[in-house]
Length: 175
Image (cartoon, rainbow, N blue to C red; front, side, top):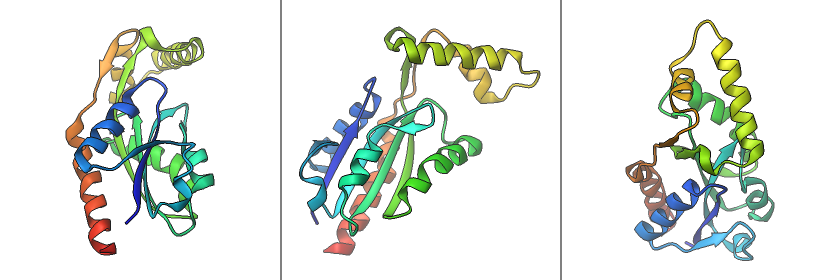
């Protein structure tokens, strides 16, 4: 099976996961602009979630062969273990995957306000302002308020294990 990893990372969490995954699997990590994507049978794409969009996914989808299997690994600050968060992520990403055999995994990364661009800082400021006005706050809302302006690192490489298992399953099936 011709498999490769792609990654698009703005602040580094997706890249950290992609590098760790490459180390664990022996697969090659490529740019989302790699000329190797169209010839791959399996692409594992790691990308950050920013304002409801996944970095690099559109680029990979344009290059991906119709017969290739795509594993999408989102990396964001919201806890995907919470059902509502997972459903929101799926509702944003799944429609883009409808043309391919695919599987979606969601991981948590790091949010460091000192490294945010001015645009992302402004977006977080607006979100926090909106949350503070809510009468009833969710656990996610409380988490955003508690970490606002700070560094919150939820990176956990053990959460790569289900992705590894899926790749092994696919490789055995193709063997």
